[in-house]
Length: 222
Image (cartoon, rainbow, N blue to C red; front, top):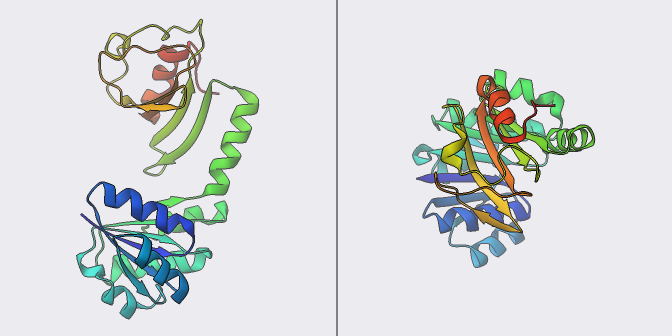
């Protein structure tokens, strides 16, 4: 798999490092010479100094061969332009953009950006839901809201504590993607036994979310 990262900031380094560990080929485009040199030194990625909103720069970075592009520029307008060029000119099948203003998310979706991520909205949701219902926090929604990722904290007296995942009989369109237990991340299997205070990462469709939450916590979504 080939991924093209366009942007600036420390997130480029962290993403490149994570992707490299998964044997994903990464090319980085950043507008700053100093940052380009630093990323070349610290990562195994190909790094190109240039303006990611310039089609010629994206072509030089290998956009024709990219399976996915992530645009992480500080300005929403730049991220939208990068994704539009990648999709329409170079036929990159999957484009992901950082959206700083949550009100711009809908525009990104209308213009066929595969995934628009608003850190502002995610933090707002976490704050609001934590204040209203501590056991369940909606982290992000994907696929135009049809799939959600939620964090669920198991209470000691909750119905799922002490049960194995396979015994819970979760809906077919809901799964536990990870467990955070005492600061350690666990990859769950059917026989994994859940414990009180486990933080579960629940991935579910809109229709299966509430039934899954009832099984895990005894309560519906807030």
